[in-house]
Length: 410
Image (cartoon, rainbow, N blue to C red; front, side, top):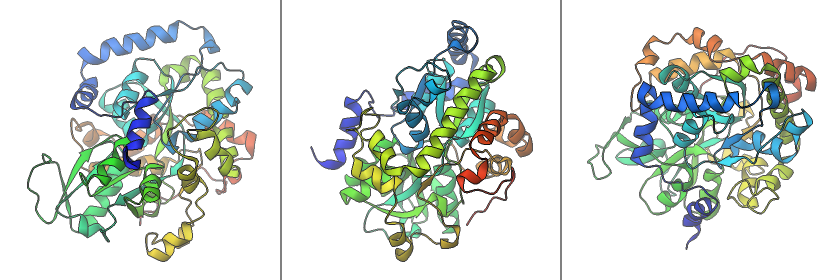
């Protein structure tokens, strides 16, 4: 077995099949119908009612990407227990589709979810999910085959995304438009024009082997899969998403609204533990990589310490600047960073950007969704504000002490 294939194999052996079938996508899309959603919602409600008050355990659902870092660190360092909560072993999922379905069914109750996906879950499927904090910022990249030197060279080729409702899809299509390219969805053997880029959905763990096997010309996804492609020599980073949208949220801490309403103290404790984990990670990158590595005590991910260090410590960031991968040096971005406050301006811009982005499936809700309303309704920032007060506020995360900001897109 060669090294690129190893990522898919290890993930499978750890209980993560990492094969996103068409059935997964169809079933996920069907969550917007009562026939499919009702049984899952009923199961979730039954699980929630099995516990009184704040007694329910923290059941984490995650994908094996660095986006999950705060949740896994909080579990490893027993920060939830320090807040008086019980925990179960975090559950690794093979795709975003399966994670969302398990969340709706109440099989997991604390998840990191792609920020655009939360819009789809709340307003597309009408499941009452709430963002209570950001999980991290940046942390993703567009990785391409070594011979590709620019975005324009992706014309006539296929690029993989992890999910239609993802910051990756939004940023990729923005880059394509800026370079005169048109995103399309065609069969794998379909003919592409020179100005067209075919988009396909792949689970993150399948992307490295797909790139190595030349099934795709590139992928845009969360780390450490970009770092894995670099380390194995099968791909190179063309752009970091944080260099396109400054300090953007990728994944967010998501809870069911019933837990924020019926168990506000439980929701507060979950949020506080996650915020404390984020702050610890910012000052302990090497230790964090060891915790997450496949040889670490928790064996949370299938990734090597070398690959995780490349993401979390980012000692080679200056080389990206010299190579022209980073265009906005004045932004002083980290490859991945951690900051929990969900700025309203980001959610508003997210809605506007999704309207300009092609997504498969039912997306009519976006045309009726007011950006300012979504920023108020989707996000509940009560818990994260209180958690931040306990650790020194936003300045503790290197941010100005203000609850507002201006979105900057390069």
